[in-house]
Image 1 (cartoon, rainbow, N blue to C red):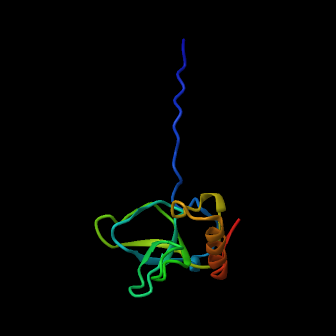
Image 2: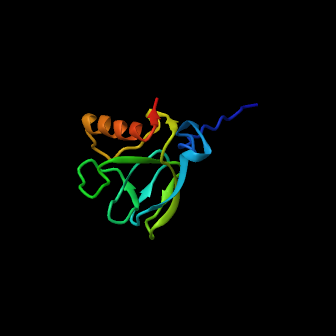
Length: 123
């Protein structure tokens, strides 16, 4: 008798990026259309609209400041989408944070400092 072993690789689960948080840590925010982001994505806020988007340290619209962490995979490719994000008072797993491709080490450090200023601590 031969046993076959099936191996599967799972992605990051909803809220898996969180180490500790409280009910006041999460907010419902609007993710701007045209994005398909994964759990753990670091977000910035577009000043003019108050909508959230992928943190972009090269931007000048407000999203250059890291402001939140996405708690679940979210597909806003078809339009603006209400999502849940960690906006304050939480510990997150640093290795599960998702940054814009190509971000420099210095810009990531600045992003982590901006999150820490909101008491979102990466460990």
